[in-house]
Length: 71
Image 1 (cartoon, rainbow, N blue to C red):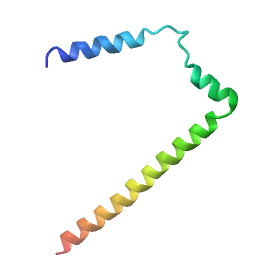
Image 2 (tube, rainbow, N blue to C red):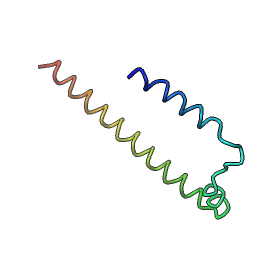
Image 3 (cartoon, rainbow, N blue to C red):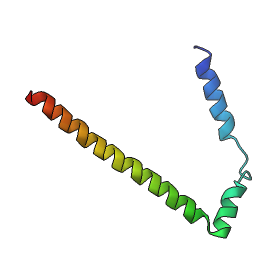
Image 4 (cartoon, one colour):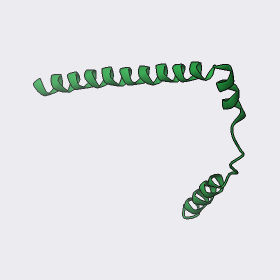
């Protein structure tokens, strides 16, 4: 366990020193073809769906808590 933290810190430092020329080629290709907007739209839809689900779940849990208090 004591060895885990230094290894994690060293791994993060190694990633932080990546050369500046390591640009992701896939992102450039998606941007050039205009497909990056499709990727962003899909991500927005997924995040919106998760937020709606969490809000509805919170409402249901709150209602169950109120019902449990009234009994």
